[in-house]
Image (cartoon, rainbow, N blue to C red):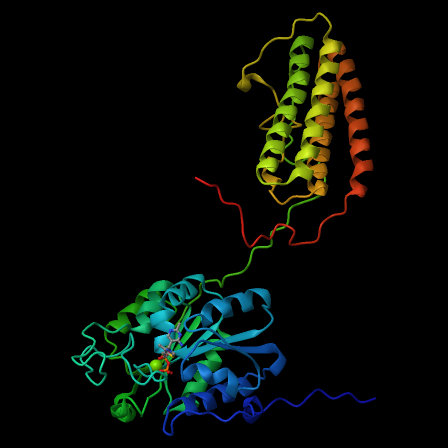
Length: 447
Ligand SMILES: Cc1ncc(C[n+]2csc(CCOP(=O)(O)OP(=O)(O)O)c2C)c(N)n1
Ligand SMILES: [Mg+2]
């Protein structure tokens, strides 16, 4: 059978059946056209592309394209898109919206999206007005624009300059286009999608209904951002001379885009990590002091873990830790019995000659978690017992005192039995699936 690769999609294939309801003359028609051309140019497929928007005339874009779309909540497009991109990094995620959606209600999200630098492309159709709600001033509206009844004397505040704001917050690609130049805009979109990290494309897109004077933008726009710089200081200098009508790619930075760290609790038995060679255990009484401390300190640690698990309502694991604490106390009693009438010295914490930073059977507290399961608790105990066994084996090998070597050997054998017992237990508790530690309502401490 002759299988042919599907033909690349044309710009029209990226338009949906739904006809735009924008006012005649609205710049957003041309932005839609520029977007669909860019998608075709990039050879993207419908199933690997997603459009996310907020609310506003400009935010209707996802409905008018045939790729996956999410017409979200006012001002929240970037939050939704960030989540989508994190969950599905294989998708090309494009965000669209207006100046009101992006810089008023969504302003906070905008700052953090720039700062976070997730690999997204944000197309803002800037008409310096709330078009959908019939013409109120937006954050990019000129301070002396007096046509809204809400601000009859003009908003009176300095407009937000999106490119400056984005540069300051860490966005990685900055461009400005014009709906009256859809082909030039297409190029800015293509480059923005290709550039890693957070790309902002500010598109001057006139609202001919509520800002009819914007028809004159055709005369106001001019080239100027001709050679994109990768130096944010240089970009800031250029913006210092910008009249908000300069078009082109201003900045293409090299900040690495945000990636989710792979967090998985290690559930393997690591026999050697952090284990230093231990020497100088030549005195029997000193050795017994260490052997007792191995068990007492482990018992104390397990008690502590059991208590913290109870505090977080994890009774199953708390019970298991309690049981481990009991085992450790039982072993301590056995060591005590071996000591007979030898006077065991009392050592200050820093006088112990542990191979690591603490007694070998008290470790791995950092791998505990309030949602941990018996599988994890057993894994921790197993790792501790293995380290105990290694500790004694080292002493048995390195001590210059024959008595100590003999005793250490017996203890290493006992620890080996504990290891075997725990290994036999482990299969009774299945390893939980990834995500076991996800909690949408984490712990909080009541005052
Ligand atoms: C929570 C919330 N507040 C207010 C509104 C009303 N509202 C709808 S669109 C909009 C402003 C849209 O302006 P912009 O993002 O510039 O889009 P444009 O219509 O100009 O393209 C507002 C305030 C809303 N839908 N939801
Ligand atoms: Mg607007």
